[in-house]
Length: 276
Ligand SMILES: C[S@@+](CC[C@H](N)C(=O)[O-])C[C@H]1O[C@@H](n2cnc3c(N)ncnc32)[C@H](O)[C@@H]1O
Image (cartoon, rainbow, N blue to C red; front, side, top):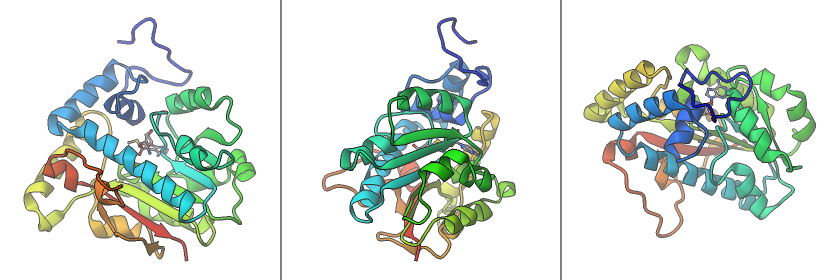
């Protein structure tokens, strides 16, 4: 049950777990309720180093936003499934390089909207909208997105830890294609996604299938996809080096290490592509 002093923003159901709040719990954030902690603890039983895996994903976010700013000259970002504010948010990384860089956070969780608004109250160059990425036109046609993003200039499209929460019925390839089509040449799309090695590693693949069930039992949904399925999300974008790799292996800083079990290390992968 919700404790008396906990703030429940409008539209938030504190008695049903939410992916955004469970992820906040795993990252050591403050924005979660008892049901989220219960689901988080259940996932940690299945993947005991899940917290470090989430941190590795945030470190990838930091590296890829830095890459987009410095190597690709990008100054505007659309962050799909951005989650609740945490350490090292996109606007913090981007504004360290250029305080005028524009960042739009998109999440369908009402808690993400409420906390994002509170965090970004004073920021002129970042905003959060509540929208469902399964309906790309509701994101792309959103008046705030239309007003703040210049679709003639390259855009950094961040899809970190989001597409694996779309089921096959949601049409993730069509969703990705619509976003790719909307952004101009020179734009960069970054993806991190749960990975199923299939027949290349039957033991890990069997564990993946068990974890899909754990997620469903906990009230969430996640789909671990094959390398080919994940790469199709990038379409004809030019895949950047080092290709599609475990999250910690995407251009780590010298000396970067992360302590993950082989299962956790190999089942969360990243790839980045540039629109020709
Ligand atoms: C695992 S978190 C990832 C957060 C952040 N992108 C990161 O990588 O650190 C996934 C986020 O996607 C959001 N999400 C899930 N399905 C969504 C949908 N259909 N539309 C918008 N957001 C969604 C969840 O609310 C959650 O905040």
